[in-house]
Amino acid sequence: KREDWTWYATGPGGALRLGNGTIAIPCNHASQRRGEGDRSHLIFSDDLGETWRLSANGAFKTNEAAVAQLPDDSLLLISRDLSGTSRVLHRSLDFGASSWGEVWRCEELPETA
Image (cartoon, rainbow, N blue to C red; front, side, top):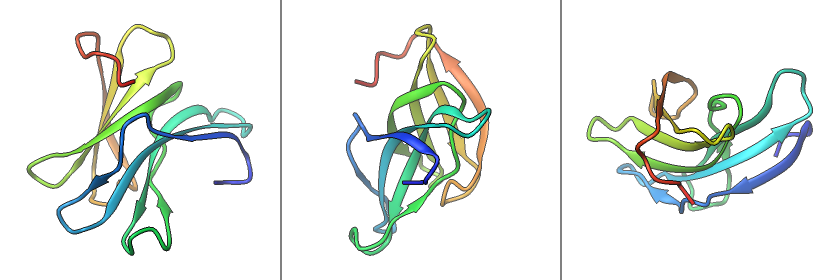
């Protein structure tokens, strides 16, 4: 948890064991840092939970996330849009999700919780 985060939660999606053995857990946080606000992200462990690292932040005003690994090994972060109108999907641009690609909004997906 970063110092500027005032809220931190995991889930509601469960942990996912990736193809290479890495554990990925969907999370969300609120930050007091200007312009950051509420966002979803992932935490990763390569050593069965001994140490953890953060992904890049997902889209602004998202929480309650789930994660899936796609056939090309990229990750899909599916989050609740706090506006209440849709789900927000992000696809990782690299295996560690240090950056996310284009954001998609989908009204047809059910709640992640």
